[in-house]
Length: 265
Image (cartoon, rainbow, N blue to C red; front, side, top):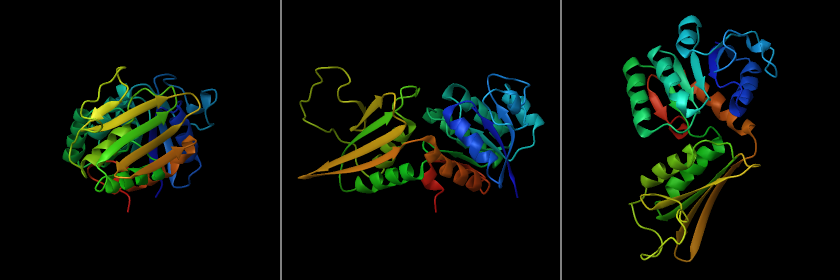
C-alpha cells in the first residue's frame, strides 16, 4: 500500500531533503504541502522545487479537509508546528513531527488529543538512527557514571537552544541517575552562563556556528576515567532513514509516542 503524505515546511533544509526522499520512494506518495508562502500554487510552479504537481496550502485546516492523506509530516518551526500537528490529530491524520522546541505542556496536550482520537503520532527530537542510539547508550552509561555534561553543536540558523536532542538526552539520563550538584561545591561563575544550562545537575552547553549541521557529545566522568559518547550528522540525508522508518511505524500506532527510541525494535 502506498502511504500518502502531506509535508509542512517544504522549503526548509529538512523539508527539501524529505521531499526528495518521498518523491523517490515507491512506497510513499506526496499529496500536498503546507507552506506560509505560495498559497494556491502547485509545487511544480515554485522555483527550485521538484516538478511534482501537488497543491500548496497556507491554511493547514483547509489542506487537511480537502486532501486525502495518511500521514502529516511536520518539519517547519515550533511557532506553527504545534498548531499544525494539533489540527492534523484533530482531523484524525496520523503525524510524524521533526520540529523541535515544543514545550512539555504542548507535548502533553498533543498526547491527549492523539490518544483520545486513537491517532498515531511520533514526535522525534532527532531522526538520525545514530543519534537515537547515542541517547540510549548515554542513559545506560549514566547508571554507572552520575556526573554528566552534554555539548550540542548546530548550525547558526537553528532557532532553539538547547536542542531538542540535548533536552531529550538529559531526560533519558535523569531516568538512570539521581539529581545531584556537579563540580566544586563552592563553584562560582565569573562570567554568566559559563557552566551552561542546568537540569538536575546535568550541564548542557550549546554551540552555534556556520559549517555545523547537528553534533552532540555526552561526557560522563568517574574516578580516574571519562566516557564520551559522540554522534555527528554531516548532512541532512542522515535524518531521512529515520523519517522513512517513522512514516512506516506511525501507521501501526493509535497513540502518541515521544522519541524514536520508543518505536525502534
